Length: 393
Ligand SMILES: Cc1ncc(COP(=O)(O)O)c(C=O)c1O
Image (tube, rainbow, N blue to C red; front, side, top):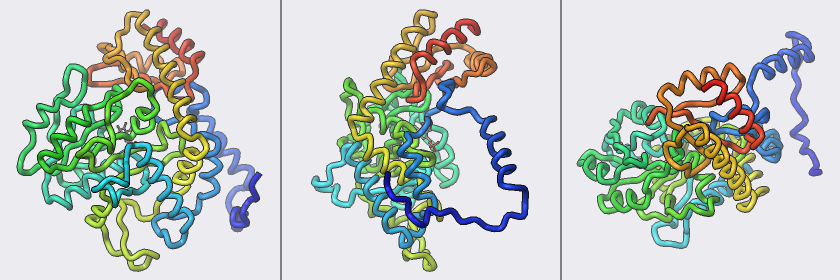
């Protein structure tokens, strides 16, 4: 057991509202209304029950504020270490020319990473068009809307990957960036990042890879041999979320940059803080989940994540077999622990299953019933869920 720091003694002011116990009772009533991952009935979310070391780290660093890093030198150092670990995981070799200034920042998740990446590239280029696949997460639509940019949607191939030839055709004088997805939200599919990177590099266009989900899955798969990360030339920035398959607490996302000096393009003066410049979308910045990400990454190590991923993939394959027996065909053979089976009216099934206490979701492209087999989902729960699904269908 480590010694508890003095600062963890909680501040307690004079309460003039209802008694403490009553507040706690109210809280528990709300808590009980929530669904909890640990019950194993949520198969429609990319988040999960964080590892216990994440929870401990989170509570220890609850008051730190990376928005004012001069007050929390230790937390700021921890952020740099998390970024280094993530870059290492995602193929960044800082000894190679062009990678000397690699770096990044922690943020609230994939949405903020996508917004920040496009914010930087818009300010760098002054251009307005962003080419991204039809399979992109809706946060990219938020990003272009907020930034006054325009989406150029890339049709998908028969395997539901971004069509590189079509990207080529969409390139124009006003193209600011291309976005590729490593682990799509609906199907868990991976775009041909290496090929897209080559195209982007040849045309001097920035490539952002959204690996919010896949960043913590693909590196741990034994049978996935595609290059989807900084090993691919042309990849300038990547988003990855420790609060999804990274088992950290919410909100933990990261934006990684091959050349982190580009962040200067979004810098504003922040004279009343401990740093002269602020270069993030948030002002006051969540730091507790940065500590959680640090702790769980240090604790699990690569082998720990590999085992978690292997179990999720085995469960995904188990579910695929069961659904096939019911006549439900996967849209693609699952590459990650996301599985979608074709269905005309998936929403009806989602609603019926919800009545039975199961949380599933749907994909729209193509219409399908979608399952995310996260670490909190056991094989026994899958079997029980499939029994319910048989009744519903
Ligand atoms: C590929 C991808 N990008 C971005 C996001 C947005 O992440 P967040 O909800 O953490 O902002 C998601 C969320 O599921 C995602 O799957």
